[in-house]
Image 1 (cartoon, rainbow, N blue to C red):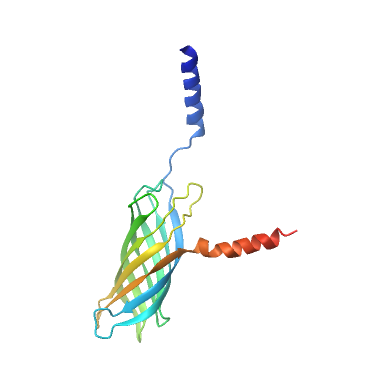
Image 2: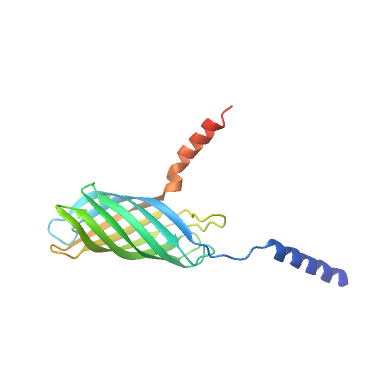
Length: 187
């Protein structure tokens, strides 16, 4: 019995020395958003347009895939290159499963275009897709499908609905990284 206890104590000491403390370091991600937008969805002049944008966020208080998180985001977007929207706000990550969380975000934005200069508005986004927690770096891959509403309250009031996909910029950069690696390591 003494040998078992000694082995168990030794194993516990080795494991406790080897294991690192759990950390809830901030995790960031940057993605390209692409899709379609129904402009002025409530008005008589509703029209479709191409959506292109970028979104970056930082999630706090998360130490593994199954944790909730909150944090700020910023985004920039355009509808068929006729206007520019710059926004930011707060996002809340709710894990539906470990691999596919739900990201709810809300904030403000300003639009320049349509013959008007920088009109303020409100935006809300629902994104569903994979969001990794990177245990070795501050950057975590993110992507998925999203739906977003953008409301400009000034006269005439408009509501835009954007539907699309977010693709992580790190995934978009991989072909270039592989090409660079093959060029620099060619013998």
